[in-house]
Image (cartoon, rainbow, N blue to C red; front, side, top):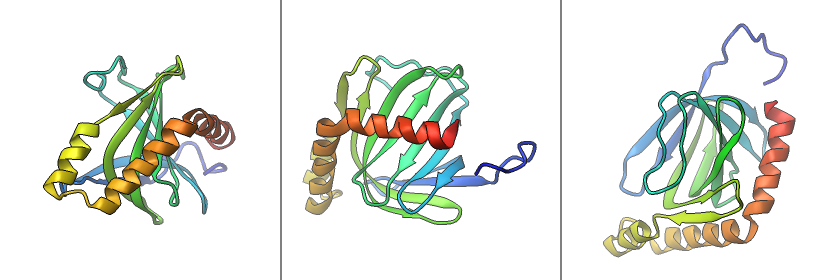
Length: 173
């Protein structure tokens, strides 16, 4: 995306999240980088707040960079304050990541993890995944993929964050 006229805003790039309950959430982002292995998007958070039950405060104007790999069972969001300080990383269990010229589309597998600047990590929505499996809205295959994502995130999250930081240095700044 480098080399474009900075006065001309880039066209929107859609992030489409398909939830287990069938709902679809579309987010208008800016494409930062795309190649065969990773897609990076930027989303400016116009409202402040934070996720319930977690010690995260997000100021209006904070930026989320989303990292999507078509062959990995997770994606990562790197949340930064308007001044560029790290708020947290959020990992989502995902599958069926598809990239087109104008969008990244994926199925959300319910589980999320928050990695905080102090090195701690918290899993969210395990109970929601168990309920969805019991109700039949998440298949045994998708449950296995979500658990594979959990294994990879818990065992490699610091390495993944290092990789995301390297991608940010190369493509974002």
